[in-house]
Amino acid sequence: MGILSGIGNALRLMADSIDVTKPRDQWDPQYWGALGGGGSAAGVVVNDRNVSQLGAVQSVRYGLSSAMSTLPASVYRRGAGGAREALPDHPISRLFAARPNDLNSPAEFIGELSWHLSYYRNGFCKILPPGDRLGPQPYGLGGVELIHPRRLAQVERRYDGRLYYTFNPPATLVQGASLKTETYREDELWHLRGNPLREDGLLGEPIFESAQKVFGRAIAVHDYGDIWFANSGQTGGIIKHPGNFKDKDAENDFLDTWRRTSTGRNRHRDRLLKYGAEYQQLKVTNAEAQLLETEDAADTAVLGLWSYPPHRAGRLKRSTNNNIEQQSSEFVIYCLAPLAIAIEQAAERDLLLDNDDNSLFVEFNFAGLLRGDLLNRYRAYLIGRQGEWLSANDILRFENMSPRSDPEGSEYKNPLTKDSAGADAGGKDGAGKDAGAGENDDGESDNG
Image (cartoon, rainbow, N blue to C red; front, side, top):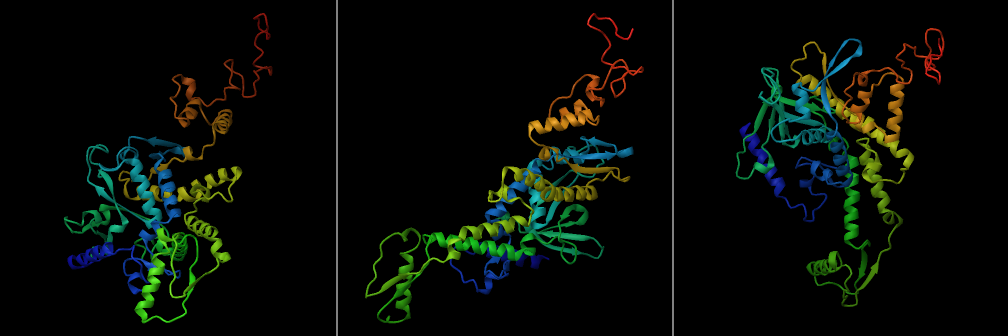
């Protein structure tokens, strides 16, 4: 392992030292998969670093991770008849809500873990030894600490039948620091896998590998656009030369000088053609004139890989005030919910150490993201209150307000049909008369 990890670290240093700003031949074999990426039919390298530079991917990253970081998570206990009891003081509840480790806040931890799971389709967390933060001993969990999926070097099943994960040191610690790898046994690591899985089922397949062609086309389109605008939005042309150059070097020198003085900051300057040479500008084709539409189509295909609504990435071409609300609900249902379920189930499998009877479960609360505007929320609360399945204190908790201190705050009886004289739900007393007609205008009882 020492020799292999040393070779791996050397390759990583070599990859980081390559100047990607220099012009490169797209057919050069060194750019086709040797550095942990893969080539696409569009002629570009597709790896996690190149893909992450796409604007659509950055929109998904921020929108997805920030939304997940706002969701409260807690441990619940199942009761009889579908009852459920929140356990805010459970160690795992405090882990998600207060302090997952000494470095990250809960928002940082959940947001980054969600992105690792959706982009690399693998999330790795080192399980910390028990301490005083998460609860009384002997609960065998002191916290969880993120390990970036990019650091993974090897996963192997050893003689004891257990999985062992080996990680390279962080890239920021390579210079002047120890180059030792870190190996964790499967019960020392919290590993979350996302679909699709690799053939061996040990790891999830990163999205930039399973959708290589989609990302390759998007990168190629945007690279073309960068070159297009670097040349003042114009195509090249043809230089007609009446004579012959002295040799090939003279010809290349002439062309290099022309290109250098006609691109970048020099693209609007006057240029001089000598020796009777003439320049003929090529016309822009319809396909080139529709560059923005092509970029939009490529970005929409990328957003679709995550079921991410285009309007959240600023693509409002087909969005209206009516369908944006529906798309926002679909964002929660089809984009966030699968991530949340994956984290919940992985936490129940690996972190709930006191769940022998399977009565405990972990759940994210999506109520805050799914609730509508103020008027629609109040209408929904009124329906729940009159239907006698919401109490006043339930509604106050939904609105992040303090509960009522009187006993009636926790009652589920509809206040519009409730009567202190013992009226039934229909508003009638035992004699079939209206319960509200108890007194006349003189203060005397109408019922005798």
